[in-house]
Each structure stands twice: as C-alpha cells, then as structure tokens.
Picture (cartoon, rainbow, N blue to C red):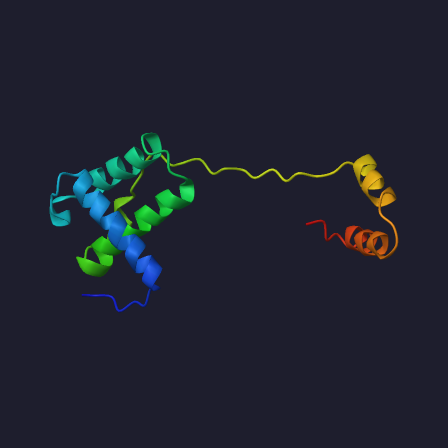
Length: 126
C-alpha cells in the first residue's frame, strides 16, 4: 500500500535528508529491521546531542513516520512513540512602557506624529 501524496519539492528534499540521517545513525540498518526503540533513540539524540529545536525534531519525526507508513506500509500510530522532546522556545515580545511610548510620540512631529499615534491607538505596534 503506497500513499499518493503531493509534497513540495523542499519538503521531499528535507524528508529524504532526515530518512538518510536516521538510517546512517543506526549504522545503515534497513528500516524494516528497526522500529519504536530506534525511532525514539534517534529523536532523543537529536534533542540531547544535536540540540535541535522542537520544530526540527517534529519535522524529523514526520519524515520517519512517512518512511514507515508511506513507503514501507507499516502504520506506526499504534506504537506510542515517546522520546525526549525538544523544549519549545517561548518568544517574549518586547513591549514599550507607557512612558517610553510618550517619549517616542513627543519626539515626532507633523504627519509622522499622526501616523504613529494612529498606528499605536489601533494596536498596530509592530
């Protein structure tokens, strides 16, 4: 059973790269000989030693799942694959204080003061 899926060219290249890395990591063993334990060890290695982001780890995991389900015909969804997950990086936005906004607005004049005041008042702070 093969999937007929249309991925973008960059996704295909990326998936192929992750599949190669997975196979090479396990000393070129055939994926049919491997399973849950090998997938978990590879993903944990990416987190601990390669220090990849959570998005990168998810992409590697998706590529491996595609290899098993889409290429080899093995459904790994029942395997409950657990690995050490990369931590999501929390983006903390930089926000000006009210006093800093007043300083900025007081140093503008003419049309720029009107535009920036309107943007700030509408919540368009980017």
